[in-house]
Image (cartoon, rainbow, N blue to C red; front, side, top):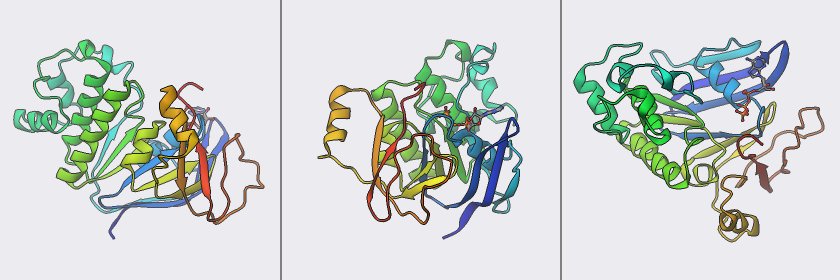
Length: 262
Ligand SMILES: Nc1ncnc2c1ncn2[C@@H]1O[C@H](COP(=O)(O)OP(=O)(O)OP(=O)(O)O)[C@@H](O)[C@H]1O
């Protein structure tokens, strides 16, 4: 399969401290990959390195020639206060024609929002507009940093369905950072769990009869625990342990993706 982006022995430093090391992974065309991990485990840092906004302290990030990345940032707190219409926002920084803007809004499920003021949008509308802006560049790889963070469960489910439709229609690969159990369990081809390094990775499996899973849905707390099978090629006797639930070779892993702000 065509590799769109690859990291080899990647190390990232923030504030003079190594926050990620030994990162080796690749994303293939059309895949949906989700990054999970506790707060501060390096998910956003990795995403920033992949889009070229953070220089590696070691190792390499290699992008396929001509790769187009659409990026939906984690937070638009400052941006949403900008006195801009959605239509103008879609043309920043790259100018877009009205037809391109309308097509992108439609693909993101945000039809008719072009004339709206950016600051007047709901959280869900803003996420869709951010998605539209990323889609307007016809990306090969769509990267979303916690796209459902500010949404309630129905809003998150609807956005997830939109993302899956986008992948189907546009054929792009998707890399998501998520604390959302629904997204991790249902949407991903592959889950990568970060904890200062790649703790574990593998295909997600719905564990509908697991007590923890039912307890989670029953309590409605949403997104505290993700269960998935994975492969390990390392032990966990080093110093990157941030209280993360590690698995053992070939066993089911309990990956604690803590709720936002935890
Ligand atoms: N601009 C910065 N300057 C210094 N340290 C930073 C900076 N940004 C992040 N860090 C540190 O890097 C580490 C990884 O942060 P990062 O935001 O990548 O984690 P995350 O997994 O995305 O967290 P969260 O789930 O809370 O969004 C943290 O220890 C954080 O404090």
